Image (cartoon, rainbow, N blue to C red; front, top):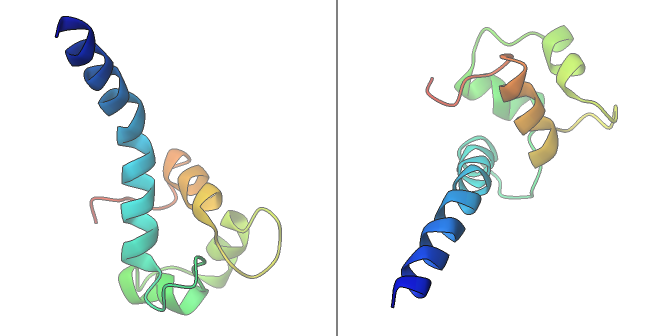
Length: 82
């Protein structure tokens, strides 16, 4: 029983950041295509500029994926609590 509880606690700790990233992507990705456009981002963050979006778009494909959103959060470019 203790081993199961400890395992569940460890899993919950490890999965929390991943779930938060999924929540952020789901909140921004209004058409649920797995990527965030500048229009989707500006709907939540109206002050977001094209230059700021480009800075977050690491692979320059014109979209933000979950990894780019996480990197932008970690860099303080977007805030999940907003």
